[in-house]
Image 1 (cartoon, rainbow, N blue to C red):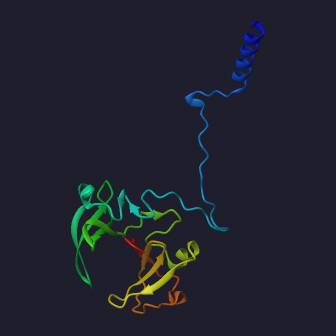
Image 2 (image 1 turned 120 degrees about the vertical axis):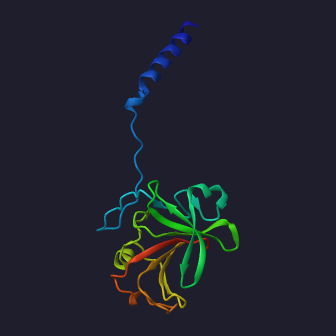
Image 3 (image 1 turned 45 degrees about the vertical axis):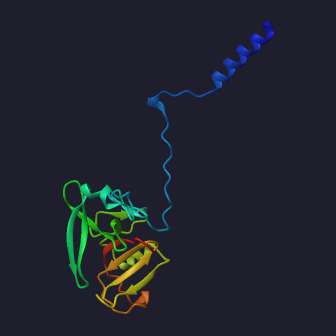
Length: 193
């Protein structure tokens, strides 16, 4: 019996000595996971206002508007296609970042979210104000289309439409026709792609 007791005590001491113990002040922080930037490019800084896959500022495409109505401001957008009800999205200090449309199939849900400020940015560095050359250095698999109604050009990438300040009424636009100096003037998180 003495040998079993001695063995258990010895084993407990050995296991305790081999374990690591840290106090809350000594804990090692978890390593950060970052995606490697393509060769010759810097990793974009983390944005203060990140544009998510299907959301922005806690507002999700398809979310009931009633859940967020207190954090946005209702308004009207007038453009060449008519007048549209929108909800403005702003910073805490009142700077407008963009807006969203109600879903045209169900007006009580969030539809397309449109970012108009150069403050927000996607995880891979896409943002309002960047040039077409900068944009094409960050993404490769995209489509470009013009709009017959408003003569606008948009780059379609995943669930985003990046509006350019380059006018074109040609839907089947060749991406090589767009000048490198054309700038992104809005980023839309599409309700469906």
